[in-house]
Length: 115
Image 1 (cartoon, rainbow, N blue to C red):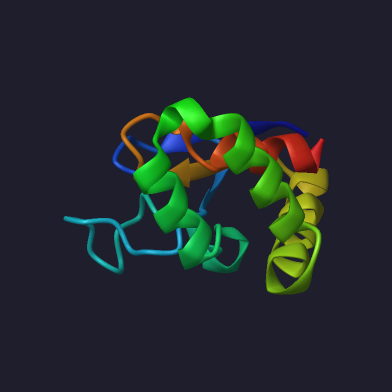
Image 2 (image 1 turned 120 degrees about the vertical axis):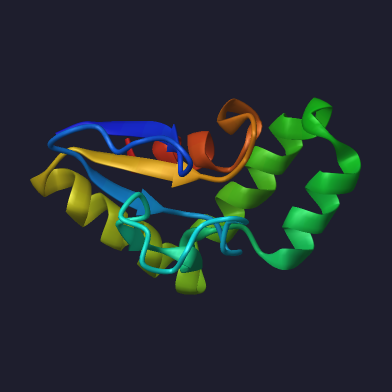
């Protein structure tokens, strides 16, 4: 099965199980919005790492990915990653984020660790 990356503000592609993977709820989206699907906030980066990356900027994505990879290897994030891997083994999934540019977000790091 496949894993795609999308934005939570876009429509869900047909036949795809969307999983929202941000720790914070997106602005302007109701809790019952059908574009969300499942919310897996435990796989998102820690608040500390998210704050560091916000201040460091996208030019430090490689270091962010390294640090986030370490977080994905343990604790609640590892369990959440295992849940996503199990979903992806059964069906096509889309990992959705509210980030303006998903390519410099945490989502590609998740996809890399799923593969």
